[in-house]
Each structure stands twice: as C-alpha cells, then as structure tokens.
Length: 326
Image (tube, rainbow, N blue to C red; front, side, top):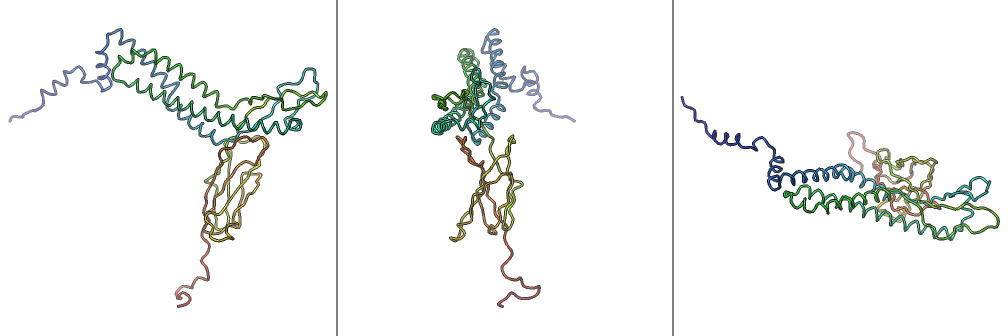
C-alpha cells in the first residue's frame, strides 16, 4: 500500500527558512535592520526605545484619558472668588481679619469689577486647558505614527526634531497640570479704601473651585403625583450648602398647567415635590444657591422624570358585568 504525501517539500522549505519561527513584528524588524549599518541600527533602537518609553509613561493613552475626564469635570464646576489676607500690617497686634469682615471693608463697585475679571480669567483658563490638551493629543498621535513608520532612516535623520517635540510636549504637559488648579486673580487697584488709622492687611484674591452638584439618578424616583429627588456633590463641602431646585411641566396642555413649575430653596440634598400631574413628564434642575462670590457657573445638572399613571376614571365594572352604557 502506497501513501502519497503532498506538500512535503514546501513544508521543508518553511522549516529551513530563517524566519519560520519569527512573528510578524520580528520579521519586520529584521527587514528594517537590513537597511542600516550595525552601528546605525543600534542607535536607531536606542532612540526608538526612548520614544516608546515617553509614549508609555509621560504621554500614555490612559493618562490622556484621565486628563480628558478631569477637563470635562472642570467644565461642570462652579468658580468663586476667595478673599484671603496676605499678612498683617507691621506692628499690628489685632487678630487676623476674617474674610466676612473684609467684605464690609471692600468697595462693592470695585469688587463687582473684580468678579468680571474673575469670570473672564476662568473662561480663558478653561479655553487654554482645552487647547493644551488638544496639543498633547495631536503630539502623541504624530509621535506614535513616527514610531510605527516602516523605514528607520527618516526616523534617524529627523531625530533632532523628535527630541524637540519631546521637550515641547513635556512643557505643554507641565503647563496643563499647573493650570488645572485655579490661581491668583490679578488685582490692579486697591479694593479697600483708606479708612483713617485702621490697619488693613493686604488682600489676596484667589479663584476657588467647587465640584458640580449632580442628581442621584438611582435614588430619584417619580410616583403618581409626586417625585422624590436626591442629589450629591463628589467632594463633600466642609459646611452645609444651600441649593436651588427648579421644576417645570414639559408640554403643558392648558393655561392652568403652565403653572406647574417653581423654584424651591433647599438646605439639604433631598427634596420631595408634591401636587404633580399623573402620567406627565417634568424637568428638574439643581444648582447651588446664588452667592455673592460666584464668578462663573457654566453648567447645571438636569433630570427628566415621568410620573406614573393615575387610576382609571370612573368605577371599574365588576367581574362578569358589561361596561356602563351597554
């Protein structure tokens, strides 16, 4: 009995091939190595490893993803002016003047001007943060494409530019991280007028950030004619805060239904809204109560809930009885 084996010569050729046990990446690397002299190849691999290390540590996709998430959070935050004394006047033995006391000494008109400056500075800071983050995204994409380029010769020839890109992106990252924290407000004029011999410490104005107020979508529930609302702040404030809850009926059908709306001041993180219409859709928004020091609040959370249907109109027919009117 004779068995005919086909393809044996081809299999032997594959086994004899020097690349038979190499994966595709190793094959490509071996082909690239043939384009360079041994010394140039060693230099290429060293520089390639430097670039790879930068892209996996200093500018990794995971790091950029976290920065994007923080950027989205900053766009939802509220921004305030915080008044702090720099130091006491020389020789002053009085206790430190508290911020609440300082408000009584500050010129209201000048303070309103500073609030406008704070609003503009916050908007500019958020725009710059977005621009810096975009530079990091584009820079990483360009370097990643260079790392994956098939021909090593342009990589070696342009290494000086690559080094400059790495340095520039490091500076961009440093600027981005530094700008993530709101800073000083630049005061051109004194906010406190001279008031005789009273010694007033120099005032330092800072921009402070408060985390956004958000509805708890799992705990906020609609019933037939009322809703139970819950909200929270990611970082709990040191002192209790005041909130402003707004609600309104969507798509009112009569003039009277247009009155199904309101603004409710709340001193807690929970509230029940009663006397609503059954089987209707309402929109709720939550924010912090207005503050004298608020300079910018670009976002507020909203929630849409539908109340449950009410009981059927009229008495239900007993089992076995025809509906009324038949």
